[in-house]
Length: 296
Length: 306
Image 1: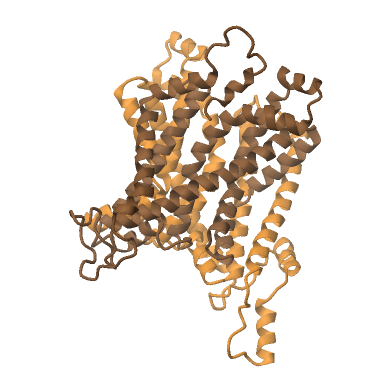
Image 2: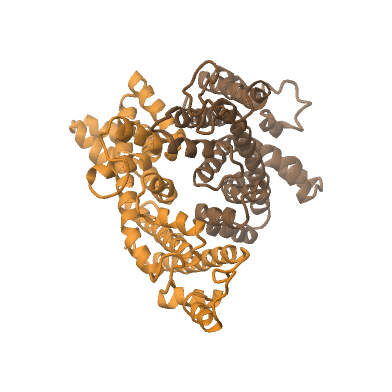
């Protein structure tokens, strides 16, 4: 996926030696970046633990009536909560939901934002102006407040959550993509495609979108943590889609933190670590893919 | 000179757009809140028709009535959950509290963020820079509700250094303000560092140094003034985000501000109060965006009007 910016050079494939593609160079840079490698490994580990771990750990909902609020020990690595449930199992189960929400929410917003941005940037100026005004207006909505009443009123289910979070996040994608498309549509290879009689939508699909993918991927890696954070924020406020998400665990942990610090520290720590790694990865990816980046 | 007709016209267009946006916000919120099944006065034992009619006259309203009330009379109606209080009364008590919290957080974020950003730019390449930037990364990653709870656990419950919650008195305000502002301190540190680094290499700084100006004067008069634009640009989104963050911080520290009332009103289906909070926040944000736009044209004469 990373080598998509290289597609800018297609049509030149018959030329003798095209040299390494920009995507390949970016990958090389990324592998040399210790932060990126470290946080990727940690995230991989986290994902493995979250999705495979529950197969080996205790049942997240099983209540052990004789061991409530037990401190971390060999039997319960992260201790147990006020109902005697194993915290490690619950953190892993909550992680599944958080990661899934982060990825799917991002995917939704990226798809909508990319299409919107492409259409806005590619066609005439009047359409562009109108479509960007809409984005400007939507930007100034106090969206978190609207999301809160939306989720409260329409039930706490996943579809409402995706709709609510996706509706917010696509705006920035649309702006970024539109900016890229504006520059891109003056490029010669687009003109060439047009001269050959390729239709607008085919140009967008085959030539424009592959070329904006680099930027979109960078933005998407930074959107995943922000969606995860927003879901945790809503869960913390009591608008969770399940009784076992990281936000719920942190809110529960806060209620018992005086007698059982582990209930706050472990879910909060794991969430922070996850967000930290994703931010690091996003930053590194941006540095690697952006040739004009002054950093490094 | 900057108040030329083009400038005024642009501001006028912005104001009109802002009013339209406000109507849009009211409409969306109204539609969402009204879409839930059930009415507030429908109980198992229905009151007598006269009582019901009285209740409806005091509490019920249609979309158009509400919109007209807001736009022309600044009438926010009665709260459903707070007996005999208008929404405006509740908001006028809660708003100053939230403003104070937000303002302290913003001031702390700007001051600390610029300071750390400047230090990390001046110590480029030393371990100190790496240390600050690592702290900033953690500051950006840690959610404010985790940080707030942790601060409360450590400083209030374990060390007994500060009261656990509330808003009266200086010592109660320290933890909430820190919890709310850390993310923005971290962001401003990063933005400031980038901007300082870019400007430190420019000719005018070299000239100022060559003239033998004292370093503090160079930093304060020349560098800061030219580097501050990206930070100012960031302030409007930061303030919007601080307002959202205040919802959880007010909840954690039990501060009687707008955010806490908002969450309470949503959970109690206090429809007029929730709408009122949303409208006041929106007004504030729209005004702020406009203000940021105007300030920018004054700070940076290069921003000419289209």
